[in-house]
Length: 306
Image 1 (cartoon, rainbow, N blue to C red):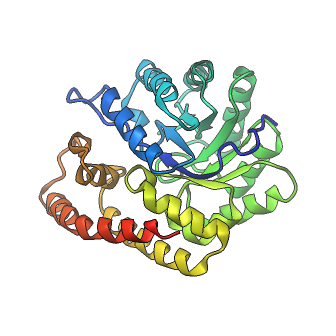
Image 2 (cartoon, rainbow, N blue to C red):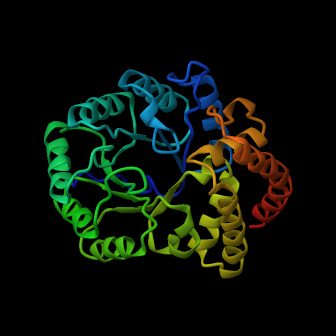
């Protein structure tokens, strides 16, 4: 198995947004790097770029390679690069580039858009492993909300090959998590949460979290992580309740509009959602901005407590 070094890719990590320029198909690199600085300054252990929160599907291979290079150069913490692509060849090209520019690890979801069988997903990962020899350690990326999901047996079968370093499970499905946790008692791999709804309840059983919410509220995600890892049940309950309230407020928006609105409320005005929201959603966005002022104060006060 291609393993990650001790202490690498653990704890609270942020899946950062990749804001678009006005042309709609290129990344505002300067703003993306400012947001990367923002989350790093607030204590995350690593950053992941160009995942679902980073809206990678909008950008071509060259644009994604450019942000990966700039993020690695800029970040003071390790950088995980999502190399997912609808083709094996595209994923391999992204993986080799990310490795060359110094990414600590890679994320790879099953091929997206078209439906694939579980057998086909296993074959996809096997072919990627064959073609991308010498790459940085690769983590499976299970994201059934937006692409082909991995059943528990499928994820376990791929990890058992020893060709992948672990998994970011964004399903929020406790059955999948339980199967992965059981497998980790037999073979070593990184087990990372990718769904913030499970952070408070399951963090103690995982190696860490790659959190979309951490792109907007890194203080709270790192505070939940601290409480979970030290077994502070009272702090975990308070912070988990704050996180649940935040998720409930952003849930009506398309991913990752809620995170973009949060960043806009925190001073990154150009990070606001680039697509029209529609009248009802716009009213909700306006109400969210008002709500967030009080939430931010309460969050920062709670997170200041050790």
